[in-house]
Image 1 (cartoon, rainbow, N blue to C red):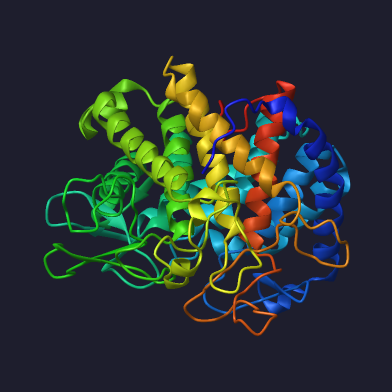
Image 2 (tube, one colour):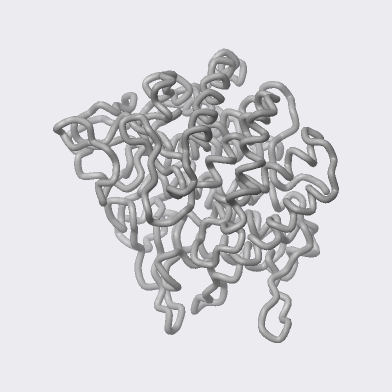
Length: 458
């Protein structure tokens, strides 16, 4: 990736101004035409959103997108779409015991609505706020109950694959536990044991940083600073580490870039959470210095790997070890090419990763770390790319907002419209949502508005 060191937030003013009307038209069309009886919208096929039964992890992005559109525009019809969708359809996600996706569904909806009320963007209503907070407390506890312990002490929230499986994705659901803790909640276990949501949040983050993120320390012959394994597999009998793995990447020893982007965005957000946690709460967990250090190391390593292994414009291919990349000589040194006949790009990874880069850059800059400017510039570089063609779709006949995203390359779920078999030209719900979320973050930073965080004060 070639970071534009001269880029500023001001360079995004015009692209953002053009972006919000397009975003609003797309989410209004989706909400008007989508029938929830069909499940959740997942990806587009020939420009129309459709579902894909696997797990229902994208519904919160649909209604969360509408809420974010209200946040950016002040148009109350989007607030109504998001709020009504949350009330009518999201309760089952709050109590869903079978997934690792609570951060995606519940924080994107109940969390955004709570944030807006605390910011004064919604009229103060104690009972409405209590409704959002009860949902977030319950979600955090339900997610924390999906727990296994490792042989060497800490534990992890296991994925829908089963108790042996630790996914990168779940670092984005740790914020459900973090919010629950801030709201004074605990998980109640057998014999009325009070289980700390903070402890489980930190332990999951520690286990992920240890096993899913690599640091060039020789764990295997493919160990490289910042490489990420999508999945870590443990022996469920004794909790010992067995092997890296993947569900949606090319191999256990390459890096699936969407999994990488979850790590990039998850750890900076948790570092922001630690800023509002008292030192005394962190003492039993190793102390503030140790907890912040392992999270910051994982954040920096993953962001560095992204920068080193992404096309020059900031958009990655779907996996850094994808076999067709051998035919794209010098792919790191030139702009991404979604129309190449060998391997798809994944613009959704860029939308998620750009937000991680911006949050990490802000975090470091606030602490006087000169590296903050580099990460901020990298985030702005990637965001500028996906706020324009060929990635941003301004065609109102296409429901997707961010084109050239992929869901599950190994299973062939994504539409490949040409004879080369390479998916292109379609959107995914998490890509669209995270582009809107990253755009809102940049808009707030540009305008000097309240920094968008789920961990604001009561």
